[in-house]
Length: 315
Ligand code: CP
Image (cartoon, rainbow, N blue to C red; front, side, top):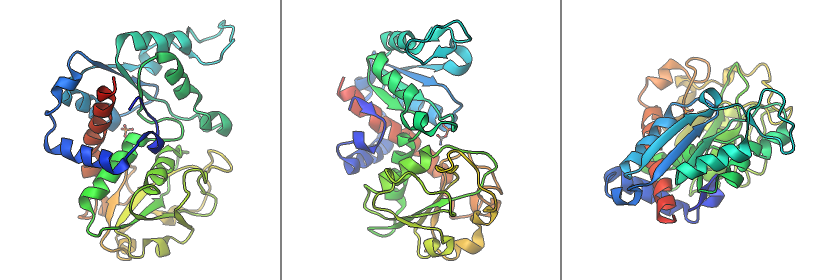
């Protein structure tokens, strides 16, 4: 594997999930692969889980790791080709990405959307420029429109915890006060549509996702109907795709609580984290027996390790 930006970069999703679960059993079996190899992790936005789990995954494989918070510690990057750089930007992404590629064997990049210009966000300008200019394999640490390492960890978690061969999985919109990206729900939908699950997306009217990511899903505005018989509820907020990046008023009742959980098949409750308590998800759910959010975050390590292992094997 030379590029990991979406489920479309994976030749065999089931095999990758199985590999992640094998690595969980035996994390240090492939240390020879990463010997004298360096992973660069480049963050243009904050992170806890992605940063630590990917770093740990690389260490498990015997790699060295360098982390650059380029938004805080690097020179201000210019993205536009042909720009006359007489403003605040100091270094063009053409040189910056190419230079990073001189020091590392694989680069991970996190770059969130601006949520102002849909066309620009969905063209993945920053991420694609890193891919174009760095000259080494690139793994997405969450881009403007997708979060594939999260989705792989989510699928690993479902595979581990499922009690039926083909579980019912529900992606449930949740309230939030801020406009959040569509990257996690887009990506989760895309992966679930390729997995052996019965997949439903439930959201209030106005929160329809881009249909490029949801082909094959059942989509409903009826939260209770979606919860009925669910084995996994994946709770997540996202801002509207149309009007782009907006928070629409009046949907506070979409927060999952124990009363709503009664409608499910004793569902496991998932969330990518970070989560705002008692806004997106109630204390009673997060502190209750059905929450698997910490277990799910733990699986980020094995998802990242499976991807890095396949990249190292292809170097
Ligand atoms: N879920 C996730 O990506 O967490 P971080 O933003 O903390 O990395």
